[in-house]
Length: 402
Image (cartoon, rainbow, N blue to C red):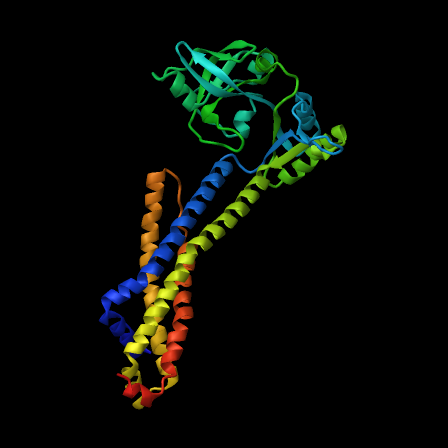
């Protein structure tokens, strides 16, 4: 076997240009698979990290929809959930640690001559623990602020940078304006930059006490959603069941509300990204197929050129098995070396995409192993036919071949 390997390397090295050209397809294929899958995997990891940063026991309750039929169109509901529903969940669900109703809307926010559009969230103080929101400076609003209906605000980092380019936001009063109202809120805290977390982007949000904004700013009795937190990841499923029981007893229609747990979101994201990675990898893998055809063509040419050599080897005692293994080894070595080079090119391309596109990419050992294994499999698959053709040559006819 060692002699066969040496002979295979000598044969490959004898025509460097042809060898390089035959390897290009495999190199491009492996590099494409690794680069494409790394983008999908990096995106998936980024989403999972954002969700995992706030645990996996959050539960989002939002309005559902009314069914269509009889000429009626199915419509989403907004005037459904109330803060009383949140209070009942807190009182009657033993698996639930925290609950907050949430009013959510976009408003124009102004400080002196600076203004921007921002999402305003009216919530209970528990939201800071539930979402694991960290302060860069200042303080959170408290239960006392909630009970006293104080018009105070904790703002996201991007909002602070926009309204206060000099960096001095604490104690300043901002105007939150809609078509029907204008309210002044005093800034008492600025959040650390966190990126998108689950259903909101704290960096672009302003959080205010629910009681202060419920009637003054939003002026509606129904809430946008309710956010609950189970005591632990292990009790999250039980908490969902308890919440569902309470809401169903009120509405008698499970379509009127939606309950989505963070764990279910993670599972859906994992399944979706795994399918996306498979699809993108399969598309990129087509170039491996093209590269394999190129390998087979080159090996067929090699067999034709070495017909006399095959005849001589058979004449001195080589059997069909030796000839078959010899040419199959050459094909496998070609694709293996091309696969290794392709891995390096794929990693380089992945890092380039991350740098240029400012997105997260991740090259996992499993992807590398699969890419190299597939390239070897391509060598075996497309090398079998030329190797069998070589092994079946008649030694007498092969010696006469010019």
